[in-house]
Image (cartoon, rainbow, N blue to C red; front, side, top):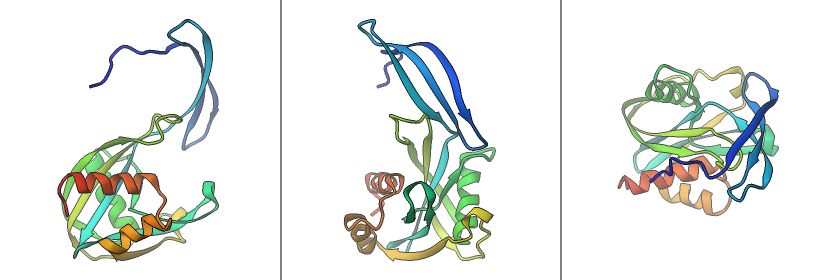
Length: 180
């Protein structure tokens, strides 16, 4: 159940930085006891993440992630800029893996790093997959993909090869929907 009444009151807000991908805001706030404070956060649009399931395993992608300075494995994901999140999920899956899904099921929406951004992630299960050609964006030119079995996927999480929190959370949603 969501509390409709904010606990912290916004006194003022200012834009600190903006580019094509994000805005950084700094808000003067008032805590419940009346004491003042500051809160800085990133404003970003939601994104979609696709869990492509096939033959008891998953299709995952790997690319260099600049903020963490290394390559990282994850489920396909990207900006939710299309008219519908489902359309964007289909597009991201096809662009990054070449796969086309006969069926998409919305598994849920999650907050992405809720202490520092308003961004959410819409998680979709993709099944009935058919192979095609990937059509990656210029920024994804180093991307690789592979299929992994479920035990291998779980091992990659426990050994630290998969550290993307959205991917791990999406896997949990998949499990909770009884998709084993």
